[in-house]
Image (tube, rainbow, N blue to C red; front, side, top):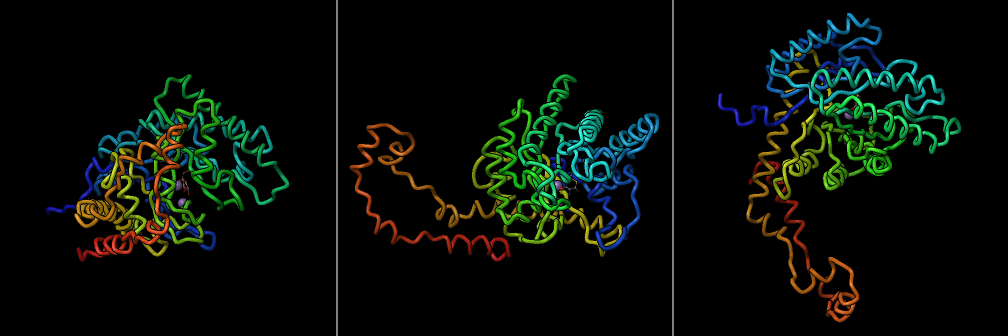
Length: 391
Ligand code: GLT
Ligand code: MN
Ligand code: MN
């Protein structure tokens, strides 16, 4: 029973109600699994060793529930969480399912739709805070278009800014301890979605009135759909102090949003991601939730769903073990040891006229430097050998 990969609360593994609760419907066929009760999901998550559960307002409280029904559902759910030792670290709003959002929520051309979206989000924020959430995700799935002529993209961006500024003020006014995390996606369900990548989001955040309380929630599948390096996107967000949340899953490049089990595709990228988040090479460990925004294949029944969930956590922990071993490997350390040059380092860190003079006087042999091999073939082979278990 001594399983080195058994999840612990320190691992901070979380799942969404919508992930393990996904019944397997797709655009070509209906659900293949029964709907699971949220309280049952929480109990099961407790059993398999997850730390937390995240939710959209309507994953728990139906869109048309009365206030009395809402309160009953929420109090039963809270009780299930307490009994199972499950936290609710993140919450979000469903601003994409109801037909009112078919042409966007905050970006809709109709002020009544925008008002509805803001009001629904305030209610969902209240719900999230009541459940203990500290992070609030915004995924603007319908904030896009197929018909470019319908809206100037600058108008869309301004409307999202107004929405974010309004909701930041709401959180501050309510004295909630809550941060926002914005999630980018290039397309699907819209032809094109505004703010297609984490990089677009990072810039937009700096234009907000309360940018200090807003960061990003990058998702493996979404950056991969755009053909980008997820590890670089996450690294940029971390370096900026803006990685507030993360959606782990996996994805083949150039496909629909697959949301596969973490590490199922491209385990090498998953390895580099875990290495970055765990800080095994350099820097501090990132302390946020390891949230799996993924779901089981449509081929699976409920047993397959829980096999999927255990697989996400187990793969993460195996990759963490590999990352620690890789970064403790003396050959790896030797290959990536930083080159220090006490004469040159200070010259190029900061501009001054004196530094320009000294820089110009330096003897730098371009042909010699260009002829030296770097050893990255060996380094990458070591990655593979660690991953495949032969080292
Ligand atoms: C939806 C989407 C995800 C988002 C969720 C949060 S819901 O399943 O595909 O990427 O993170 O709204
Ligand atoms: Mn996501
Ligand atoms: Mn996705």
